[in-house]
Image 1 (cartoon, helix red, strand yellow):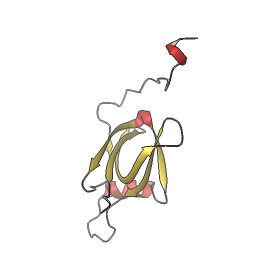
Image 2 (cartoon, one colour; image 1 turned 180 degrees about the horizontal axis):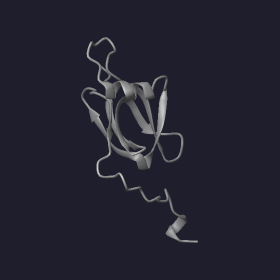
Image 3 (cartoon, one colour; image 1 turned 135 degrees about the vertical axis):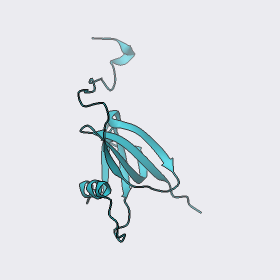
Image 4 (cartoon, rainbow, N blue to C red; image 1 turned 45 degrees about the horizontal axis):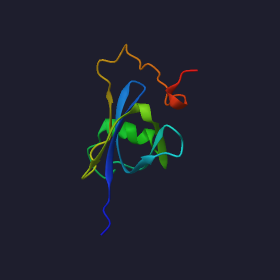
Length: 112
């Protein structure tokens, strides 16, 4: 019997932490990006709607796969079942920006 994997991906985007669930995660075809496919969201048949999940669902409407920059990924977990996708504020980082770092260095670690 084939097992179905579910991954929880947490990443930072424009000062907010996004938490999404997907069936496929891997190293993308684009250098420095993680490829995320088959995003999972809750059923629309429920009477109670979560505004935060509706917002993230609307943002990813029609997206077949997305490429996330490696430096924005906080963590990727394999979980037993998917939860509620959400967007939360990044606490304590209102005045802080990440210092840009190179993805790779010159061969042999030499500076030119």
